[in-house]
Length: 450
Image (tube, rainbow, N blue to C red; front, side, top):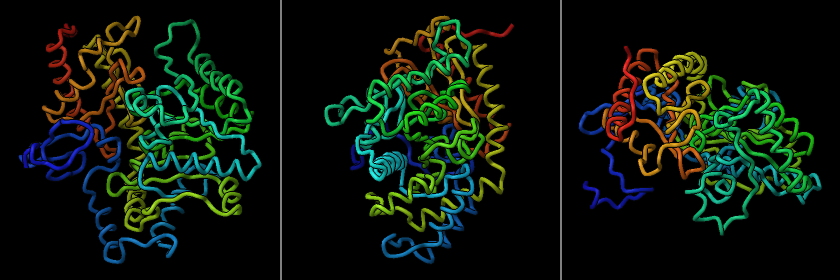
């Protein structure tokens, strides 16, 4: 089928070949060309493609039933996956609500927070503070929390306009503070914003523990996380962790929150939770929040496919693979290898200004000048061009504009958690080639080893 004959449309006119099959970290188009899935799709395919054990468990469920509406039946896959999820998350997060994707998960978390506040006689609380830049989804509720101008601005008149605080992009700071001091500085911005907004009107603070598409694997200083938890507790503000991208082992822990010993009030998950085998997401919350809502008449929310038995059988099989194959531990080990390789790029390419991340959620950012962190000229469209050059060479990576969506260029490298040291080397060889081609194309310097 030619592009002109297609009745299908998505975001842009950017024709791609037809996908033939997936196998491990590789994807193959109909011509037989092989691609390394260096971004796990959109940071989704955590356990790789076409895992035979997951497919077998899905097939077994398909032979029984593919749908049972939650108001009519309980299902073993949904009950079993909820129990498994609660067992793998920090103590106290023991109630699970299933959805089909990340935007649904974030909206569900916010709606649960609001209904809980109502049960506590706190109807004045409705504002949800988030960070800028950030990404929390593309439905209206999630988009109002998102700090990414190109996606949000066309719809801004149709939304409430939730308050924002600066994301802790300390790598851009030029001051005399230590990293811990910078972390505390950014955390205090939240406290100031709560006071400015009126503490009795602030419902929740939502944050990505490791940045996703809008900030490129941004990791705050360690001091930031505990102080944010303290500030939320001080004002009775619920802390929501958007772990849609970071959850299910991506950062080397089941939840990124575990790196800092933080237990959020509500967690949103998706992407690697179903790992591309079925549309699946969840929110996880403590009984102290869920039970009052159920006692007050129930959670006034829901989706047709919530707790779908086929999706939940896939999710349960994915979590079993994470445990049985030691993939979370592998993400930590291979994440160290990958970070070393990415940092090595800075020696050859002066226009790479920063490398960051946690586990197998990593990124590098282009700059015109490392000393000032001035971004490359937007007209170069570097964030798009490098992706195309890598794709032509058989490597899939993911990019966005870094500075709120209007300038800057970062590239996420987030391969499946099954990746080996040798495969990282294979991936990096292609990335080097693409970077060389980009530098030559736009006239940027490359340092040649002596």
